[in-house]
Image 1 (cartoon, rainbow, N blue to C red):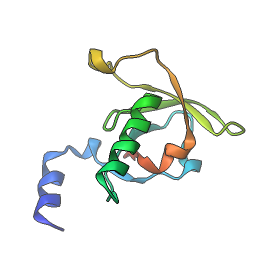
Image 2: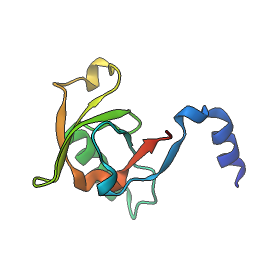
Image 3: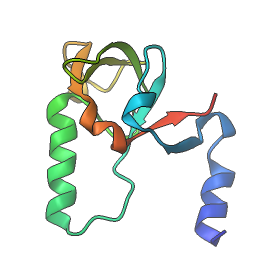
Image 4: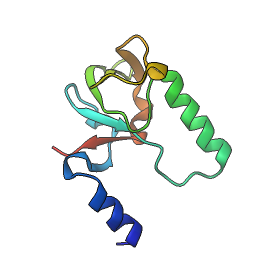
Length: 110
């Protein structure tokens, strides 16, 4: 494990450490998920595009969201943050988002 990874592990409480990426099938009602952009990006433009896509749908990296509903036929999940966000990020909750964003989500350890 790199020194940076060891430091991050030491600084982040175990309850907040995230498991591996979720498969679309793992997006189930009641689960808490955390959108992330932590992966190697082919370019800065690709990163910005992915970030803008998340923001446009109401998902902010690092925020804990609870899955309230899931629609198999429409391939969507309805989510809301588990806590109030800063005023700039607040909107009408819950929001319904495409499950295609699942590869960018992680879940809290249970």
